[in-house]
Length: 112
Length: 115
Image (cartoon, rainbow over all chains, first blue to last red; front, side, top):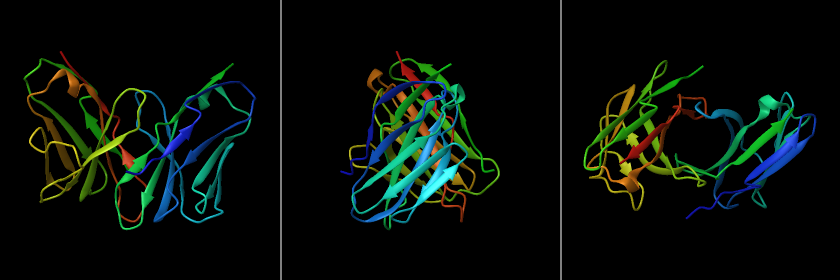
């Protein structure tokens, strides 16, 4: 069984705060790590696909880092806005396997 | 961008009846689609991989006779929950990967409640 763990489970921050959360995954047979942003009643939206150890990706105020050797990825949000409120999912892909294993998500609430 | 349309978004059914959930890739062909289930406060769990024109591959512990998957065309996969029971109440969501993108596109999910 592949365990993908995300922490914290939920997070409440004030508008303007910067925040980060963690995804940990098995370090063996790594192929890719995906981050998704999932708003209620909508489809999960792909944020990043990360494949190389040391990868850093950025999209506006959101960025992510990847450490495949120790099996973790961080997602950072700079200057959180209420519209950033969503559940952030990470998902792990193994080599030679098409299916993704998801974490349970971090539910972020940004208060105005 | 690639879109996967999933219907219905919510369904309530009586115990013992069957429910069909559809996933359509609207602007790309999906030879493979994935079906996930999520119980409250838990991860999305892969149930099965749906393959166009062939049998689905089920994950360990998922009953293939209960969760019937049909992937008869390159744009449509269906999941039928047969003889549903209250314990089947869950959130079901599908995904597919447009060729060459490396990204997974999701439907918007189906909330099934069996009463």
